[in-house]
Image (cartoon, rainbow, N blue to C red; front, top):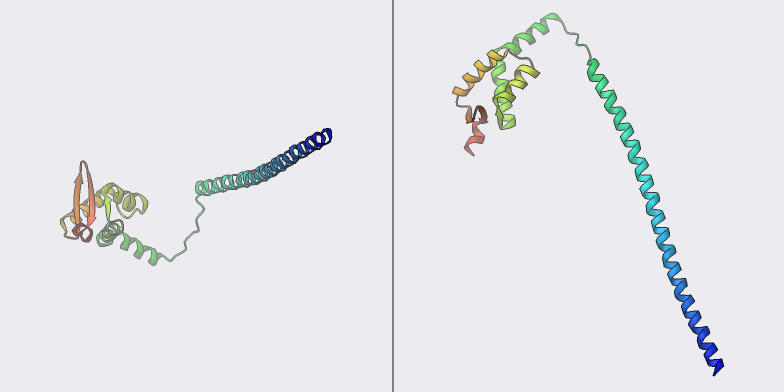
Length: 161
């Protein structure tokens, strides 16, 4: 009987140790997995840090270039410049520019148009712009919607849809 009991105890110990081995193996797999994830996260963090650094440098360079406004100098003869100036300042050219902006954007406010035509492109003065815009309002090419104090201009084709 002692022999069977002794074998039974040994078998139980073997079973217990085999379960411990399985648990240790599972734990080792988890530790390996977490080490891989940590290494991956560290690599990703290093990569993102490098990107931020590069982006910061790009932004600094871009800001510096904008401050100095480094643009190529145009060298054109006098007659070309005069023709360009006359063409730009003609009412028809400005009218066409306004209408094309309304067509392109579909719906645009008078303030946005003024910003583009007067402030950005410098095609005419503010008073000339509003005189031309009043003339365009009377034409059949566009529709005008008054939204409070703001006027919105729509291309006639879009207004019919």
